[in-house]
Length: 345
Image (cartoon, rainbow, N blue to C red):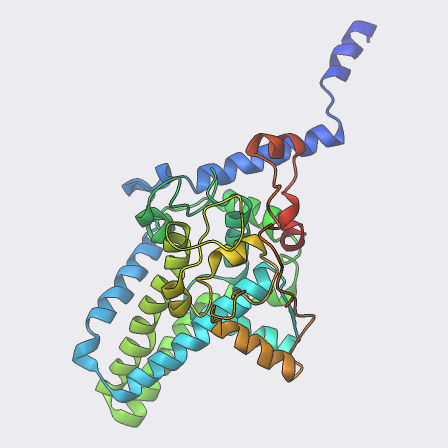
């Protein structure tokens, strides 16, 4: 081999840093494309998701014809169990942001509650949420009303079908510490069974103790009405709290604190607080910012089921993400911004 040929080959050999940078950019391009609004077209609709959402909304419209006080009670209890304990505490503050640690029994129950919510598997939810924080209101944010519109961030972003490759990239980049955990693998494979099993249990229990109308009432109220209410309260966090409200902290995005979303979503509406300090367990940072999910975390800590709870309320207006690099600086570094080191490590 001539010296000149060797030099040409050497010029094309990438260093580990260059390889990592190219891989990071390729991953970023994959995820930006996967969550881009252009993916929403008739030929690329995820009909499983679309038909399921249409079905539960149709079931909710039928609720007045199958009203029962038992169904209403099941609806209220299951809304709190799935939305506050499952999503807000389990998927969000525990899994996505590591705001606390849970004992194995508490973790298992929280993941079951999350699966019963119908908002997807624990790893998918946590990975997508970490991506949202990484790219909040920038290109690549899965549901930004600032870059797109309110309807996209509220619901339409759920409808495009996404490739298996984009899912692998999402997991590899945003939840690498979760993918090999046996409990996470278990719920990844069974989350749909928990959801449908919950509905079947309501139907059978109602039928046995009150006849077929009671069975239908429990399904319509305990599943359809409850899920529609929980869905929209969660989706309002994605849409409304990036458009309206006040700010306690100077964040790089447009997150806001919105009182009525905080009521509907068990404290998650104090969104500017959360985006400024995502690892802090309480979402309400002022005395008037009521956070029902935080009450549950305190109870779990009191009985020893939660520990290492990050409960220090920050002072001042400076946010953890105040100095997050710009898109170009991030691409040059090939790293996730330091503000997400704790949640993506």
